[in-house]
Image (tube, one colour):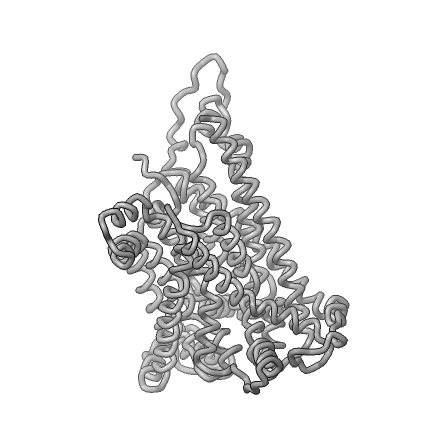
Length: 299
Length: 273
């Protein structure tokens, strides 16, 4: 395109329209997702209908795998996963809400320090961090050794039980609850809280009628993130729980590895995918993402 | 907001407590990595403190191999996810087009997806395509998971940007390519640097995806996991600490970029007002 400087530029031609460029720019992403996300998932769903213990994709579809799942004890591991995830979400809400409140409303420079300190941990492999708890809690570990030295109490290993698994999950997913909560609590205007206090509301009333409803988007997003991530958790139960509890993710993994029953593993995955999809779509449909990312509504 | 001193002290105390518990495992690993004995027991005498395991880890060709695999995966993942993320950020935040809202929701979906299942799905997909998994198939897996994150990070930068600069360039007769290279890329550069750091870090620490998609190659988190589940070895905490230190260095770079970017943005708004 050559334009002479003296003449005002002509109206942009048709292909310069934002609609066109928006579509073009989203193309690489769609291609990537088509190849690396949608196709593999369809592959899994399809494979779930193949006869058990086979590895070929082109056979007569059958529902046999789903029958196996419902007739055997696999539902137990699904329930375990959902139960552990629910407890994790509730525990994290209780732990993170006061901290998020402090970060959003009370601390000044301290808030960004806490943000950095906690965000940094996201980049350290989950395994390494969980292994730290193993060293802390094992027999003669840091906790046990300290207790023995200082209080002369001998304790056995604290590992391999259900509370430790929950501790591991709470620990690993804390940032995913904390940061959305901070965002949510920042959306609560101070003036509204002050007005309520001036009108004689008690602390509890302000929390129930103002803080909680206005920070609800953060609460919901945090809970959703933590729930979905922890329902698929695999390392916590393995490293800290020592096979005490079998989660759905490790059930799926063992079907693919030890049992060599790919169709059954696929059928389990399909159920699992369906569960997460329903939860995510239901929850995401209720949020205004642009508002949360800080875009001002101008139109 | 008016805060009394006791309130502030209470909240600070609580925050300190949470941080302490949060960093407890890392402290444990550091303590364990410095113990001379083959079987860790705490507390150990000062005389047993040693950096032997670090020396062992740094000299071990095996560990170097795993670090090499992890680095290769991280570098390629960062490259691809930032390039694709750049364009999808433009689609996400910059242009109005039909299907944009759907796109914004779809971008998030892989993030909410359990990684172990995605890894397995990719494993099956590769076997269906008769591709033998190796370190480069892990790059595909990591890119699928990390691109949404780079997209979001660059989008945040793109939201804060003035559209009129691009319009002005266009009115002056710049071609699309010129606008892209001279205006859009430089303006989004801080976001892209942040995104690169994020991508490298997340890929470096990723375990769930690598477990299924690296095939015969093995990344550092996979190797650590295998060693952790087969009983205690003093080399494991040492390698863990080395990996953490590498990540922390990159995090410091990342935060410096973010802080510099914020200062620049503040200066720019101050200048225009």
